[in-house]
Length: 248
Ligand code: PGA
Image (cartoon, rainbow, N blue to C red; front, side):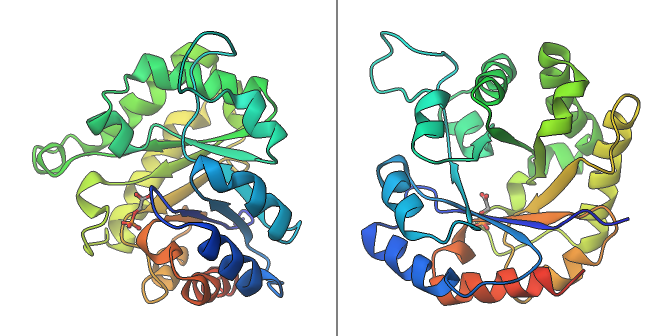
């Protein structure tokens, strides 16, 4: 059985008030069966929540690994909850690579997000070198396992996992639907022992657009998409959401 699909738009450090406004207009009439989540940068979260329809979810792109206190420049999960977020992306490969986030920190963030009542979207993915060395499953399942070890697998009943091969992000070279399916199945096998994996949604991310979303969504274990570049144009993003919604 397919899970309700989820489309999440990760703006990264792009966009502004005008994109918030155009996204709100574009999604005002959205009636598809897919859950849609928009993830703008921190300063736009509150106005996005005000302007987006209530049915559209709001997500942040990062969070502190601490609950509160003297951590200049950090943002706590409880603050994101107050701003109207329902989701938080954690462990994105850009944060792992450019900001040296460790598996341990990512596990702490995961716990903070859930403690605030929000849903973590845990990103995992292999580099091209890791894929070429035949280590894809070991790398992505290892990234998953590091969080499972810290918080327990039961916590994944209230989480989303996103498979984002590093070589496919922002490159225009998406993973084939078959590659995505293979890795998604491996991730679900890894989690299957203790939780009902029917409830665990695994998204694919990496150069997703309105042209390739359908073929990806036809795979049995692709439960949605995490979209970067193609989430920055409001009408195109709505079209992508409609494609994903139409795939079920
Ligand atoms: P992309 O980014 O869609 O621009 O490849 C995806 C992501 O990094 O989440």
